[in-house]
Length: 125
View (cartoon, rainbow, N blue to C red):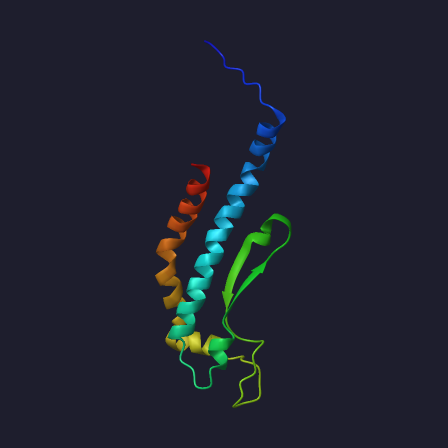
């Protein structure tokens, strides 16, 4: 049985060491784009009276160290309903009754994996 030996220069070694992080970054880029699309659909579908619920829908990034790549599409809080003078604390009830966020997720869900694959494979090729 034969063997193959590669002599890699320092640039190639560095590129290989960075590949895992780059792949994760590229996948995260695609995930963020799809989260913004989901946010848009949710804002279209949500039933609103004053617009405060719609305005409270946002994309959040979070986590620590390598898990900073977490993405959440959330609604509620941060925005005051002008009619009640309170923060939007009723998104759970709107979602339970009408399911606008779930509907937005179901629209975006099939394209998430495809977008990640496209971003990653497109950069490697």
